[in-house]
Image (cartoon, rainbow, N blue to C red):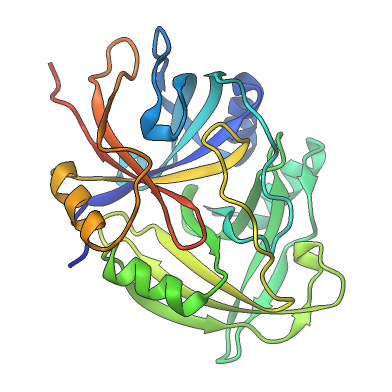
Length: 302
């Protein structure tokens, strides 16, 4: 029996300079600041796998507001940020964060003019069954990989999870997490320029959609070249760290995870979120490739 959260709520990206990254995601990508979370003092960090934690973060929303996923853009204060985002497009775990935009070419031009690290021109990825999609990859100010595709509005649309074993990850996200595959895509063999890869590439993707938000978890198997195993990331490392669901019953979901053999970082823990925001309870664990998943049980609004 899978866990029973209500929806995917946010994806967290750790940054080294919150104001610099905020300007990038608002002025260039087109997101809007919604809520700031700033705990006033360090607190126990067992939920994150850390001793003590304190942060400064902005929740950023797209055109659909809280109806679609939001970005948790976070700068660590305790402990300070470390490491670097995933740079190898074949590295396992969370690899790229996807956004749609109504005008892909205009966004590409805007990012190039701003001096952003744009990997290529918009490029068509073609599928064996026919059809395809245009996209380009860009690094944010810390080098977090973003995948930009054309869509009806500006929103965070998907996350790419590179899998060491695609079938095992598909079973896990279905049987334990409760998502259902809604598409299966295999690309043609084509040049790897869009991903800064020399030579040809081929990918196999299983798309898992969250029915409440429409957000897509793209489980990606690299056929050519193969996936590159990456170590599990720490909570304060720069780049994409966690994907969070809302749940009304975090204790029940914790029991289900335990019965499925999942080892969480800690039992559900209380977290202070800062002035004006109710505390919440959170639970963290890693997927088959170590990508951090989170359950959030919101606190009562006073």
